[in-house]
Structures are given as structure tokens and as C-alpha cells.
Image (cartoon, rainbow over all chains, first blue to last red; front, side, top):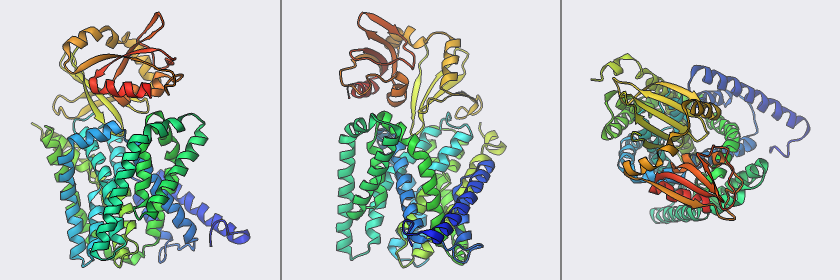
Length: 392
Length: 160
């Protein structure tokens, strides 16, 4: 059943179901706002509740929802690309390579090792490494802003680290996508090489033609700009997918290519659209998880979370310390980085076709649920007394 | 004028800070959205800011008015001599520049390049300390202060 084909009574059922789910998500988003935590864990729980074996299983049309969810991923990556100016990216690369490598080694390794310990194949373990590695830039930015920490000395270091993680995603996602297609070693090597080549070509194109493209889009109404950016994102994403580079990366590079006033306008315009589609993506991700799988994944996820949370604290501690930040600031930098979110889910969703895909999905969901809730709480906690008074 | 240090906040904007004569460290956060925050650093924990005043673009203009004319333009000459790494540059807005007809605020030049536009020369007239709603015309000569890197970026932007 597809959305366009659904007519008459079947369409009405779909509308009622989707409408009811959207209203529930709206309530959850308000609740999350009230509690000052990320909406992502709430959306994941809602997906579990309406999935197979959940509290109120819904028989929604999977074709339609999965398409919307895919667009959600593209828009998430597009807005990520739109978030940074080329100056910031260059500055991040120039000053942050060592912190970035520290972050990657310290935080990728636990996930990768955990995957191997669980007896998964290497590809699934690599994906779990990615899930474990990338902090949620959405949650981190929100926490920093809410706690009025944007002025703090450690904040530029934290933000630079997020820039590097996001750039690292531009390499990691296509490599992961190539690994998932899973052929023999030689074929995989070729796929990876092609993927990286395509990324490099698009990136170069984005750097050189980005200015001209932005100028081209600049004049014209908001409506025209929104449609153009949306269309471009899907088009480039689709072509990238065709070339077996992940579609998400195509979208990310479109975001990077836009610059100047167009970049800011596009970010404002796409924001609400992204919220809508991304909510569906998170919902659909956990919709496909059997709650029983999630329950059995809770223990390993909790164990991994303990190591992964400590890993981020260590990363923040080292990176902030290197920049001359004091003890309290080093704690703040570490704890604010703890939360994993959107990109962990994006990475895990790459692996759905793998033999261990279901386990990966359940573990990633449980892992994100834990870290996305504990991270902001920990970040708030270190603002309190014991950590402040420890400053000499 | 004390030394103003500038830090990029990727995805957010720019942070400018200086130490007052009284020894307090003050930061102004320029968000890309035009929002401003004023933060005062903690004396016990110099990495953290204790209070923050949140201003939208209009509040910021009001506050700037109340505090007096832009000290930047007054101090340009002095700054140029005293602060290492800071430069001043003149850029003509050419015909076909994408910023002809758009305002300084729309261009968000300070946020994007870290440079400050301190004056605009139009024909025989000088517009000192143009406001954010100053609208560029063809052949305007823009006088800006910033790092030489930032000024190069500004030049690239304006002639694009």
C-alpha cells in the first residue's frame, strides 16, 4: 500500500493513524521540552510502543513511512551541512586534528570491540563503533545553549570537536555503506575507493561551485528556495545512492555547498521540515524493533554506555586540558559530549540488511536511550557544587 | 582600547572578549541569528561565565545606542597600531555583486568573516559606523577592520 494509491477508506485509516501518532509525538515533544531533555529518546519509545509486540501495535503502511523516514535522514544531514561555514570547517580541520583523532580512537573502539564480543560480523561491529563514536551535535548544542555555556572557555573546543565528528561522518558513512553491501574483500575495497572518490569529487565541486550555486538560488522567494534546496538534496542524495555512496552524504555535501545568505535562509526554511521528517525517522527506526529484542539488548547497551560515557568524559578532559582549560571546565567539556543521538541512529539504520541488523538496531536504540538521557543530566550535574568547589 | 580576542563558535557564531579596566573578563557572543549574549566570567572559575544577558538584534542596537557611538570607528587608527594581526581594508562593491541592495545585517559579515564594517564611502560622502540596516549600492567603498584573513574573506564575499 502506498500513500498515493491509498484511496477511500484505506486512506482515511492511514490519515487517522498517522494523525494520532503525530499528536502523540507533539505531546512527547512538549514533555521533553518541559523536562529539558532531547526528544529523540521519546520518539524512540513511541516507535517501540506502536511497533510489533508494542503496547498499541499499529498496522501503518511501511512503504510510505519508510520513504518519509529516509527523507528524514537526508534532511538531518542537510541541516548538519548547513550549520557550518567553510571558514569554520577549515578552522576546525586546521586546529582540531589531534582532538578529533583522540575522540575517534577513544570512542569508536569500545563499540567495535563490543560488537566483536557479541559475536557479530566485522561490518556490524564497525557500525556499532560508529554508533558509539559520534556525539549528538543536536543535543550538545541544545544543552550548551540552555545552560548558558556558550561563553565558556571549553565551549569552542567542544564545538570544534563536533565539527570534526561531522566531517569524519562524511568519510565514515560511505565506507560503512560500502562495507554493508558486503562482497568479497577486493570488491569491497573497490566500492570503498569509489565511494571516497565520489565524496572527494562532490566536496571539491561543492567548494568551487558552491558560491555560484548560492548566488543562483539567492534571488527568488522563500518558497522557491525551499523547493530548490529540497529538490537538490533528494537529487544529489539519490545519485549518490545510485553510485553506492550513501544518500545521506550527498545531502550533507549539498548543505556544505550552500554558503552566504542562502545558507542561513535555507537553514531557517528547512528546520521545521527536518523536525517533521526526522521525527518520523526516529519513530520508524524503533517501530521495527521487537520490544523483546530491546529488553535483551538493555544489559549489553548499559555496559557499553558506561564505557562510552567514560570515553567521552576522558576525551573532553584531555582535549579541554590541552587547551588550558581548568578542572571544572574539563569536567563540563567531557560530560556535555556524552549524549549520542541522531547520528548513532543514522549509522545503525545503515545496517538493517545485515545478519546482525536486528540486534544492532535494538542495541543502538537502547544505547541512545541511555546516553541521550544520562548525558544532559550529567552535564547539568557538573554545574553543581562538588565540581565547582574543586577548582583551586 | 583593550585587546579584543575573537573565537569562532562553529554553528553558533563568534565570541568576542576583553578584560575591563577593573579586571573583569567580559564576552559578547554574536549569534548568527543576530541574537547577542553578554557574559561575565567567573573570578573563581575563569573558564565559566556566571551571568548572561540575552539580547535580540533590536535589543543589541538599543544597548549599543545607550552605551554611545560605536567605539570601534573611533579607535580604528589606534587599533591598527596597537593590535598585532589586525588590519584595515577598503573594498569596492562592484556592479553585479550579490550584496547590491542588501543590508549589512543581511550580509552578516561580522559573523561570517569576523570583520567589522566601520565606514562606507559613497561618492563624496562618508557614512561613518553604518548601522546594520545600511543598504549597499553599487560602487560603495566599504571600510572594514579585522584579521587579514577575515578581510580577504570579506573581499571575496563582496565581489562575488
